[in-house]
Length: 251
Image (tube, rainbow, N blue to C red; front, top):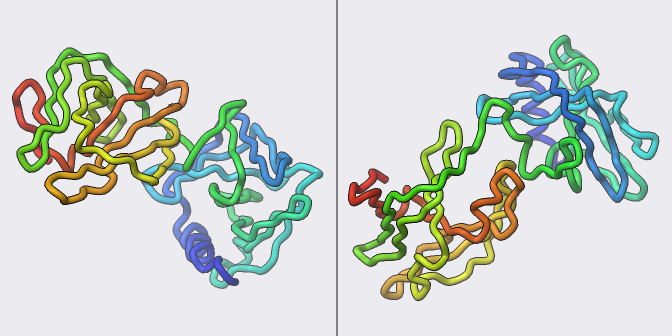
């Protein structure tokens, strides 16, 4: 049971209430673990454990001969509808596994996204979590003037921004690196992953001896769909002052 209490609670909730939504996806889904594909399937499901984004659940039958999948213990309160599991490939294993036997999730397996070395949709690696098939990103060139400031100190200004519009989220303004007052920025060691954009790196902002951590991010090598923003920088709208054509946005 060590390190699996969160999985137990999730399984109990899914068996009791069902997922928020679950539907088959036609995408080929593969998981690389310890140098081998632990599973390979065109029968995966998008399962929304909550309303925000889905996870991949894969059929028991999709696990490869190189992988050993086993049930380790039934989960209390599920009446046999869910078990904790273990995935072994070679000399590595993970217990971040749930195996289901319910009407909605019959013979489906959740392997925690971060427990697998790399997930693929078709031949494309994915990061952080699966993309929601009902959300999209648009990146639009613009000539609107964008000004960024904090505590009255200008940080950036450009009339050639890229506007990134992501379903349900506020517009993000990506600015050319030459538009930034770099004397106020210092590199951060922070990295984050986004399924739509890839791996982000960050800068802190320093003003009059005060440091505002991870206020700016950029993608050195974004995903193909977000390629135009490579090298551009973006400030957290919620934490800085932003003017769009001299109209100040609310934070």
